[in-house]
Image (tube, rainbow, N blue to C red; front, side):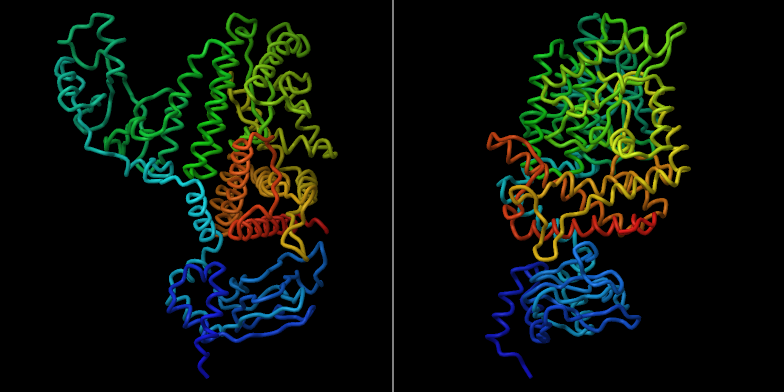
Length: 631
């Protein structure tokens, strides 16, 4: 019997409040609605139960709540792994793979569901691209919709800014103008003037770049030294210029420019020059660019200048946030610029100090160690030093600690608060020789008491920032070889991490804390960070940051690629929410925090956040099973 048109229209109006139906063509929606049936399930009634035979129905919740249960255990606060509400669909995974469900689905309240036969579900997959895309890439699809909403909110056109996620290949504006290293300097300058370019690349017979000469070099290398214009370019060019492949991203080139002060990056494939990217190409419409901030920091001679640069970093982050720069890129940019600022503070303190004669390495820990800093961050750092002949560790420490304290205080003046837990280089506990660091880490791994587990979550994400990097590298290699051998320590880390559960509720979407808020750091990103760290230690991984660790786990076969992709997308969405939250707090002149009222989110972001929390729970479930941690 054909469904009345008025009922079809009313049902479409209801469905298009939710993804993916809001993206589907009307003809596909009419086709779908005409085949839907409505089922009613009383509270506690089972809708689906684990079975081997393929599931035969696709469900869309019209009204009520559906709970997913592990095995045969009834849904309780601590065992229900899934909670679905109005507009959500199930069981997508089973339908897509044409298998039975592995969990029990039970009505949490009196519930009505739209029901579609499995054969019609697969037919709709073929006919509707939007429906297919959502079902196969659920989080990625929702994230794309959220990104569009964010762009609309900020009223910024991405066409006005170079996309930081664009590959360098599409940013190349013209074929490179080149010459040989033997070309007379006068001819090089005439070519540059005639073509209106600010640089010249010297190439060999195989089009391989061997040097670069810029207008900036004319003053310092030609005019002031009085170099003859009849001499060859090779005498004044920069040899072995920095190159990047065409598939590298614009933000990676920007980071290189910021770190080294370069104005140009050569794009090279298989050794051959493809083109040249300038700072202007990346930031033509941006008032404050990465290289300008980086250059100011590197040349700063006073703390006041660095304090101004710290403010510029925050302003740049705000601008990029408004332009829709992705969370992964933005946190790396923030961390890189903060690195440069810290590096310069240390340089200024080291000059004319006793530390010039001491081999040491300043290490950064926690979120900065993972390149995951947001706008709300305090200090987590330490020092590794090597022992000089005739001096014991305490004597060395007495020399280093005053210097470390000045660094910590200077960073505080630049807007990086002192760590409340005193995890800073000025604390004698974290200013240690390489041998002492090994002994400290070894003690944590062997004993695994609560304090050791807490320290492991901070210190095991260390990386070198300034000084003798070999000390940090040696400590990292020692840790890689030691941690994975202690299964008891890894078990304790897993058990400790599993105490921090994603805030998903059975009665409501979320379990909120003080003032009806969610802690996006503690309960959002931390479950991903902790799990990735544990697997990193267990597999002797090489990556420092969470996304890199998850990708490495997939590459090595420890995670399915599709699972790793979804975990990464979920983690980055929560990071994006944190960055947006901090941006809004600064705009209002308020204090920065990671706590957000879920009611302040639009429906789309609430749904993605709930899905992201589910993925955190899924990753924790894997961690629980792998390490046999009981509830």
